[in-house]
Each structure stands twice: as C-alpha cells, then as structure tokens.
Length: 256
Image (cartoon, rainbow, N blue to C red):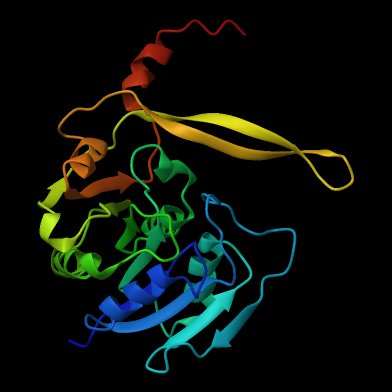
C-alpha cells in the first residue's frame, strides 16, 4: 500500500506560518498537495464563491510538493483541489494550523473548520488544527508531535461518515502540555461589539470586536481542557438536526 494522498488547506493564506508548519509535518506521513487561499480568509465559515470567477495558480514555496493558491474561500479550495487538481480523491484532508482558537462556538465561523467539514461532506477523513495564538509570529514547534500522532491514528482507524475532528492546541511550551483529551464543544457565545469610526471622507464605518462568553466550564468540554493545558479533540459532525426536538414539534397543531 502506497503513502496516503493528503490535501493541506487553511484559511490564513498559503504563506501563513501555520500552514507551512502543517505541510512539514504531513510530508512525513504521505504524499502532500496544497491548495490554499491567496489571502487571509478567516471567519468565512462555509462560504463558497458563486458570483465571480475562481482562479488557481501554481506556486513554488516548497519544491518537494505540488502547491496551488486560490482566490476563493477555504471550501472553494477543497472543491477545486478534488475536482481539478488532485490525481484522485485524497485519502485525508487536513486544515490549518490556524492562527487562533477554533474551540466552542468558533467552529461555526471558522474557515479552517469549514474546509474539514467540507471534506466530511465528501466522505473524506479530515482534521482541522488550531493553535491558540493569533500572532503571525506564533511558535508552532510544540504542535508537531501532537498533530503527527492524531493524524496517524486517523489514518489507521478512520472516522464514521460525516464526522471530522476539531483539534485545538494551547499556546504553551511543549513541556507544559499535559496530553490529549477528547472533549465535547463547550457552550459559549461571542458577545459582539462594533467599534464605530470615521473614514477620511467623514463617513461612518464599523469594526467588529467582542469577547467570548463561556456559559459553562464543565470538565468534559474543550474550553476547560484547553485552560488546563491539554490538546483537545472534538469530533464534529455535519448533521445539524436537533433530533430531540422532533417529538416536540410533532405535538404541535398545524391548522392549515
């Protein structure tokens, strides 16, 4: 059996240090291809491009692998890679390493996780990796061993259909990381604020700010484990159906 074909994507752009670190780790595990946005696409969620042309350009950042940049979203990158670039369907898609957390409710907004979720939709095993450091100068050295062992286990064991992994790594030194915990997503919301400003033409514009408000701190959640110094794995599914609510709705009286 040959090496698995691994597609690497991200949302911070093809030149971001996070994806370069992830590429270097994946080269030890399989035949690597890269398709990443040509500019930062953080917070794009599962957006796709439908009102303008998509373009891909081959780049020569790492001469050992085949790499392309795309003017679209992370999900566009996954779709284009699978249908126009790769010699066949990839065996694995990995996304990241994201500069910043994608724990709890952030998974909904994340372009990094959207790429992994798109892979799950296509029936391809996938992992989204994030480091809890938003700086472009973030130190990814502590991530390598954890990313490698999690990926190796996924290659060996696979995942149920429609499931991908959301992996977050605390921004602490390697010797302070306590290990890996499988968790559930903590309940939290973003409390949003809009900073109102004036442009040079004296017109109002707004800059989104805010903070994460945690609604729980249970010991089986990703937020708790990250605060304790663990790498977290949250199995994430594409089915958003609220199954427990179906019986409730079936008791409603629809008088039409």
